[in-house]
Amino acid sequence: MSIKTPLLDELNNRSREVFRRVVEGYLESGAPVGSRTLSRSMSEQLSAATIRNVMQDLEYLGLLGSPHVSAGRVPTQQGLRLFVDGLLEVRNLDTGDREKLEETIDSPGGDVPGILDRVGAALSDVTRGASLVLAPKHESSPIKHVEFVSLARDRALVVLVFADGHVENRLFTPPPGQTPSSMREAANFVNAVAEGRTLSELHSVMALEIGRRRQEIDSLARELVEGGLALWVDEGEPTERLIVRGTGNLLAEAEAQIDLDRIRTLFDELERKKDIAQFLELAEEGEGVRIFIGSENKVFSLSGSSLVVSPYMNTDRKIIGAVGVIGPTRLNYGRIVPIVDYTAQLVGRILSDRT
Figure 1: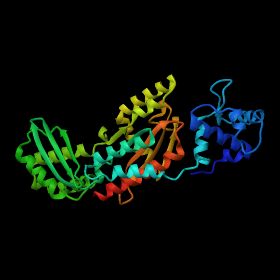
Figure 2: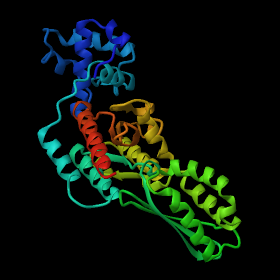
Figure 3: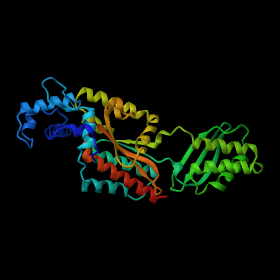
Figure 4: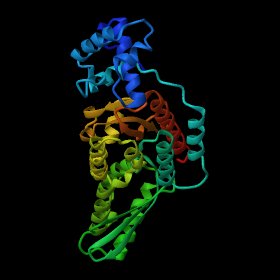
């Protein structure tokens, strides 16, 4: 997982080992690491005074900080980033973690939302953090059937059935003067071209078809089709796309009042699910697992949390969703990274098998 980092190259072997051991000690205990503790574990026999001098140099570089005057050192956000990029040793996925994830995902039955909810629960349980699962837009799933249902003079329902069994119901305001006949005509028109196409494909095809066949449908049906489709391809994402599980794990980890305040801030941010459309954007910038530490993560920056996230893909290698784990900045990154990576692969596989 290491990346070429100029600052790390500037450190000599002694400074690098002190830095690595401080970070690893902090990630394991959550407490500042002192020079006396390090003097007993260093590969080179060094006095506590010598180690303190090295720590001061690392603090000058912005890699370590001291919470209290007499306390040991903890990594700064810059230090954690340097460690993750240059020194993190990613473990092999634990057999028990692998089996627990596979058992959950391979359980028979259930629709896609149900499967993804089970995935979120398993990921939270395995990592003891909060899990985030971003469900795929159903723009990427083929359509099986479409219905328009009149509820009132100014209210109608679009029922959209996908090939994977997922059903979406959306309320919208129909054009003035719609009739049951125009509703049926609109549905027949859509279904004649919809089956086997994704929503994004259908949107393009419908625009062409409406242009070619304007004489075949009356103006009310055309307005109804256009109005219904506009809802499905709206820029705003429904909040149900984001599945959050295990937020209680974060409270269990919080020990100090400042941690509790940050967790409450995180919960507030999670409640504003409309903002987390950015979650997928974080993962779409490249394949594989990405790690966002503290303020690097614009979605959860106020809570000072870390996010480990990976996209999952369909059979065409197109990113359709993402899975992730959020927790304190002292996450066990070496263990969490392979868990998130493997979960993303499993989700991509099972969703591809269902289409």
